[in-house]
Length: 117
Image 1 (tube, rainbow, N blue to C red):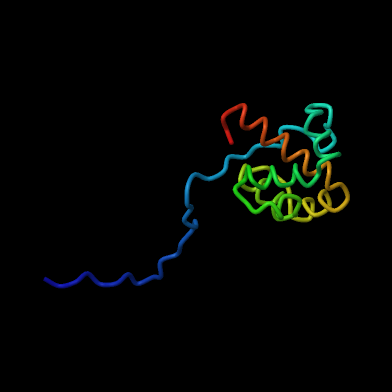
Image 2 (image 1 turned 90 degrees about the vertical axis):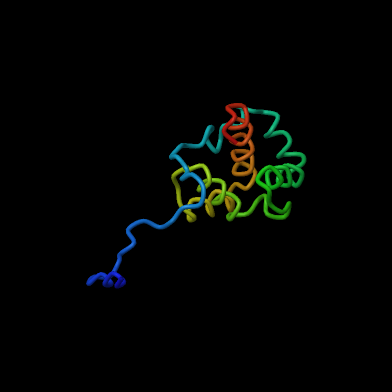
């Protein structure tokens, strides 16, 4: 028996393979300035910033030194399909690192409560 002839045209891959489920589009559970939606998180951030940063990094399975980085915010945002850009992540972490960190922690807490984290 003869092997089939190769196709006369190249195979074009239209979509890239994806490991795991594709993230569904969502939004932040709270705004960046919504401190009063979870005042405990904001108090922790104000008085124990490094502890909160380490807590966020640990929640995400990352090194404690990464908790306040642009990369961490971008990773979180893309993991949960939250629209935005690296530029926006940079601006948030540069100009208001406390607000940015608290927003991520509030989001983690709310997603945990919904069993979506």
